[in-house]
Image (cartoon, rainbow over all chains, first blue to last red; front, side, top):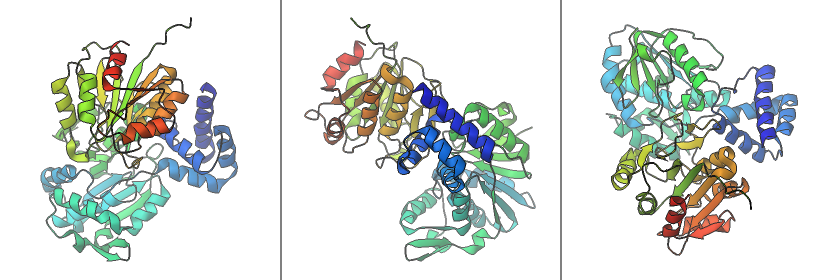
Length: 271
Length: 189
């Protein structure tokens, strides 16, 4: 078992050195679980076999990185978060001539479109720029397309309504066969781009940064690093939203944020 | 004579019918119980803290919902939050994940059991209680393979026998016990 742990660490180290993807500060138990799943799906018996294979085979490596970095989400995930955003944050953002938002770790884009809908309903979308980034290229492609399985719409619609949605949700998409496509007008002000939170730098200044259920995959050291990155990327009095089980506890910037909604994990940068 | 094994943690998985089974196991445990107890009870996602509140009302030992990256301490019953998987890290902290459901469940018993087995090896006790789902069967087997003690609630007694039966059928349960027996076993650890 100890040798397996060493092989696991060596695998992550060589991926970092050869490909520049750094998973060494990810929460280990989740990464291990994904590695084991990948090995089972590809009928690979041992970690050192896997290490040899992906270092030789770039296509397999791509597949491996996709599997390691994929996150799943849904529209208006945790409706009370979006309700609170609407009630406590949007009015204050309305005072800016241009509102810049960073949705970090946007996965397949469901929460990006949720935010676009929220801003549209408050009449702010035409002066809002949303930067949606993720490490995972395949997820980002899905996000860009804005096409989702019809079967998910029941859950999404229920979430939208619980989040205080005021329209008929079906007005935002068209359904064709088993797929729905979100309205192009929502996409106009969204920029989708690859960004790796573990290694890439800040790239703009934002009034709102949203990063939900991404930090849970990182260890405390990387959590601290990434929250620093968000801190640097926020304007004074900018807002920051996290997943409802995440916290600023391990950040040395925590005294520079104050609660906007403690339960929904919405903060404001005060200094 | 081999030295008596020293246990360091208990993991419990329960689903339909779980609340009364958990109450039966936990109600009489003392506040200074020597091990941490980690529980995945299948639950609705918007249930928030209801399960913890109900259990705390009936138990002396401290019950709480896990916080991200929290350090695992003895004498506390940790409950997986709704809509997240719960994992045990090698440095004895918890991680949460939003990975897709396993056996239609998030939190999933298998995910907790497999990660705890990896960390605690033979110092772990795994218990599968009542439920109508096969979640927990693979996890209990993982605990057994790592040398831990594995227990399934007697299906004859369980409110929903399917889940402990699935764990037994998969070969992961070293012992099949009633709630009273399981309670006695963990009380005299």
